[in-house]
Length: 342
Image (cartoon, one colour):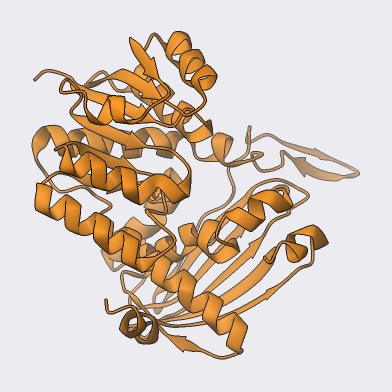
């Protein structure tokens, strides 16, 4: 089979990650063009990786008949509109999370994709992480028996700027959205209701921007299991990413990845490496795996492993968490769905 031809929209951090994954690790695909509103970034990435064309207009990719698939790596507020344009042009789509901050816009994108009959995959890369994937495999095998508790810890090494916090959609939508997806992925069940608490404990500027930097959310799943997610925008020791599934027959849990497994033991104590610093180090392998899965789905005509419906659910949970924190009560997922006519 010939290689899948791809155009990447967005030459920022995640655009660079996917471009490198395809160029160095996925011979079944090739990148024909990169676009970014910042032409300097687009040109630099194209020249660095030998991509034939670059542009400052994403429509040059959408309208290129030689490009079969589009990667949407632009700012969040452009994801849905570009997805709709790409679907209308008959392109297969890989879109970074979230598709949009609103349910209505996600449903519009979903309708366009379904009407066009194209493949669309969402960038919830943590499903492809070697540790989390193994915990999920064990939980779903039945080895733990009935799942009763799911625990997720996700803490960034340093807080973002207040400007980023103000435009990100907030901690629940920007940061915890990965964990909402992971919780359901691990539990093997949708969430029924959400109770959220949040605070500004790390950087008061984030609070002044209208966001929180620390949160704990409890979940009730439809299968009866309970879940707990804790997030912080600052962990002094590095990027803290751990999950646990507890069941009637046992528990499966993973630990943070470190640069080495070396432990130094002396009379003063036992010392090991800190967790890898941030998501580019910690999750690089998962970015490659998710892109391989997308390319395979398009080439083989099989369903994408992470769908538009998978993109919608975490946004509903994020909205439920926002409402819960604002009103100081448990919020049923059904409330959010009924309000938005889902």
